[in-house]
Length: 102
Image (cartoon, rainbow, N blue to C red; front, side):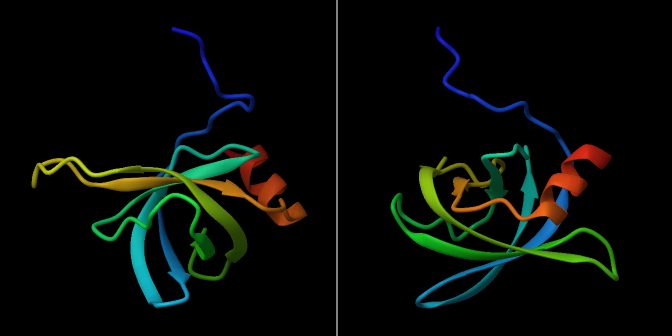
């Protein structure tokens, strides 16, 4: 199988708040890269949905991000969380610094 990913992945688990035009939700972010991240959530959005995110790096530091859903996973299994892959629209410098710290 050919690997589609073009950016190195970093694993960390952090709380994230994300929203679309219909509301705001909470989830857990993980699997970070320079081009995007993955969010575990019971409320995954459909591919193509624009998403605003607040990545809660620490009690004092939040990184604001924007992106689009490129893939949604709905397992149908209550033991495995659903989620969505997000491609970032732009990568702020503070996000670069966060990835370098992982």
